[in-house]
Image (tube, rainbow, N blue to C red; front, side):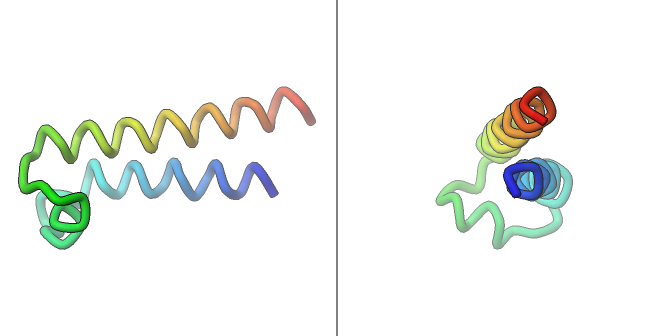
Amino acid sequence: MLGLIGLAVVILGLLILILGNSAPLIRLYFGDKSVITQIIWGSVLFIIGAVILTYNAINM
């Protein structure tokens, strides 16, 4: 179950990084129109998801 949550967070982070320029609603949700903020949020979510997946893989 934890692996699915980590995978979902990684995918969400990647979508924010990739689709943020073409999907302005994502940027408006985070309250900023800056691409820098989009990169930061996408990276943070990706790293959190990657840590969850790594933790899940270690404890299997």
